[in-house]
Length: 71
Image (cartoon, rainbow, N blue to C red; front, side):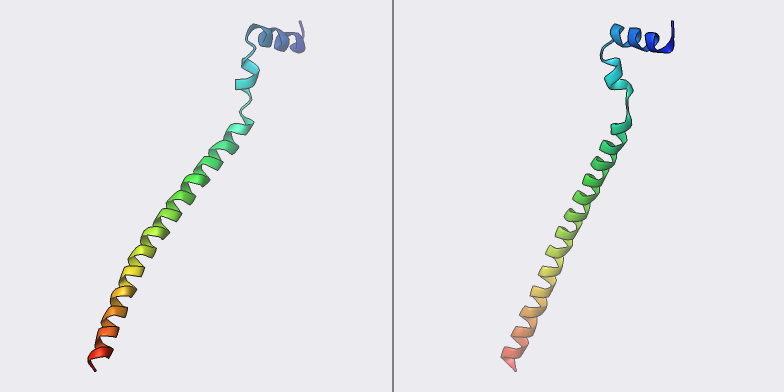
């Protein structure tokens, strides 16, 4: 038998072997999942930092406004 006959007989014995043996797309999917996770972390960090900064600036504005009213 030649190599083509061996390949055909192996795939005939297990039809799903061909689907799971090819892993070219798996790396792209893994990179896409990692990229999505990194983006989620960045968005969460920016949101938390933004809330903290907003509260700080509001406190500064309130103190400045109070000082301007008393003078």
